[in-house]
Length: 163
Image (cartoon, rainbow, N blue to C red; front, side):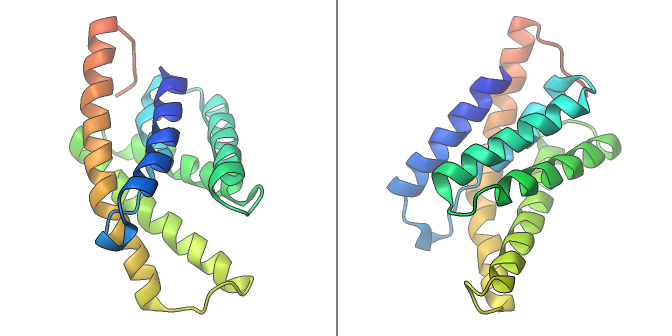
């Protein structure tokens, strides 16, 4: 189930970004959102979860960006944050949406800060805010639909996940 969620998210992100214009505030981060959806299926095996985050980030680097290994480490950092957030809040659609918002904000800030440091962009608060709000709508919808679908499949197939 974990691999299926990641693969679907990975391909949907590419498909969505090619079919929907990004200038209408629908910038996908579905692969990153998949890390939120898959965490409950690891049953407290955090080292395996972190390895999955790293490999997912590495593939994300190879396919979507030109920064080799950068997103792999960012995805591990995001994985650590997801683990900490899951220790604080329960696994539900609303809480996953809140986690998604937090993860989007952190990911966009780290990415823009890195791009600023290497000189690819000029630093602008407006640019960071635009990156955050352009990602929120589509990703919150995706995380809610993903939670509902994975939760119902888990119940039907009696796949145990932590809450």
